[in-house]
Image (cartoon, rainbow, N blue to C red; front, side):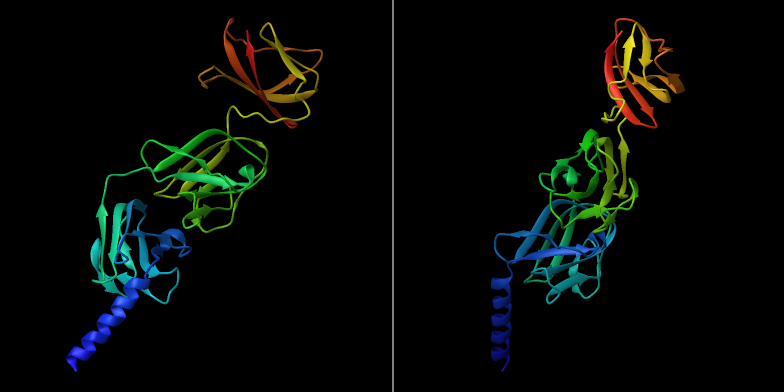
Length: 283
């Protein structure tokens, strides 16, 4: 009887192993959305290396379905249970063995997690990848975006994507798309640890509008033919702000002395109720 029972259990386990082609994990970190899939060479041990996880409850499952799912009571290693695995934030090599029911999270040196943005500005294709110096905060400057929507995501996939309800705040997994209000250049930042993000108009952004050809600089003086007040920010070639003037009225009958050094290249940014203009000039 024992031999027969052992044979049946072995047969069932063998059948399970042979058909276990898709093992992944999900949890609070991705809003219990799409599974982050793992890889295998033997359909028994499944792994994913150099992966960052915040503090989260997590479960493994088969074939993106709850019919076969496994949690655990201990971290960083243990055997299956029905509870969510209490993961501590960090970078890990992740492994699960579906024959022995063992799992492990081995701490590793931080690596680039390939954070990007995707949206209407690129027709929701071909992610714009952000840069990082610490593998936690990801940034980009002067990114040309169009009015519409976008999201942050990792590894150019939807298993870990983030949205929000404003241009700055704390991102939410699988949340609503972030609305971009206008066609201009933006500075972008995203923190994979705190999920803090910001999408702010670049200090050197260029936006076309009705006074785009209405201003010019002659001998260090700003001339214009629109009777409206403008705010003026002036940057050197390194992007450093060197002058700021607010509520300046420049029209066809009056110019404004920018008080800049001669024989240098500057970027001049004008902002008024009509819009924004940035242009280069050499004095």
